[in-house]
Image (cartoon, rainbow, N blue to C red; front, side):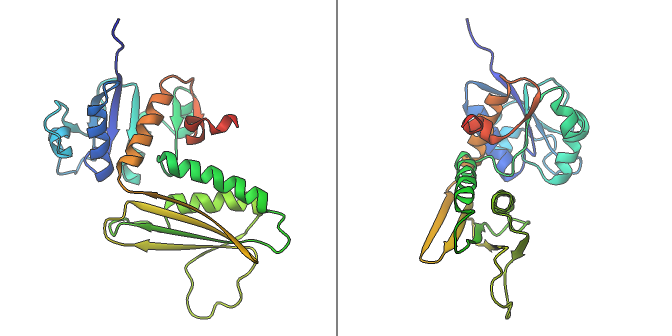
Length: 251
C-alpha cells in the first residue's frame, strides 16, 4: 500500500529561502508541493514556482491565496506575508487550538541545538564566583535587513532568563566606560553572501567558553523546516518548538 505524501504550501515561495523550500520539497518523495504563495504585488505571481526556484516546471503557480487544503504551511516570508497567512489561520495561539504550530527564530537544526547548549552553559555558569561576561557575535549576508539577527536576540533572551542580565547593548563606540556586570553585548556583521554564523562568548577570569555555529548553505534552514513539517503532521493541536523536533524537550 502506497503512503500518501504530505501536502505542503510555501508562503514566501519566490524569496531566497522560499525557492530552496520549493526545490527540496519537490525532491523529497515524502512531500508534495500543493501551493506557492506570495503578496498581491509580487512580480512573480502566476509564474511556475519550480521555474522561479530554478528546477523547472512543477505545475504549481505562485498565487496570493491558499485555495486547496494542505497538510502543512511553511512560512519564510516577510512580516507582512506572515500577517497575511495568519489571517487565514487566525491568531497564532488560536490556530494552535486547531492545528499543531511551530514558531522559531531559526529553523536550522544546528542552530537550535546550539541554543540548547547555550541554555545549559548559562545555567551552569550562573553562580560563577567572578561573574560571566556574555557577548554575541553574528555574521550574515549584505542583504539581511534586520540586526541583530533573531537567533542572536533569542540566544540573549535564553541567557538572560538563566543568569539575569537586564542590559542588552547593540555595539559599542566612544568611551562607554567599564563593562557593567549585567550586560549582554550584540555585534552584527554584514558581509558578502554569508549564510549565517553565530558565536556566543561566555568570558570569565582565566577562561572563556565559546559556542560557535555556522551554516554554509541556505539548505540548512530549509531542511530544518522540512523536518519540522514532517514532525507536525503527526502531532495533536498545540504550540511546539524546534526543541520538540530535536527531541530536546524530553531531556
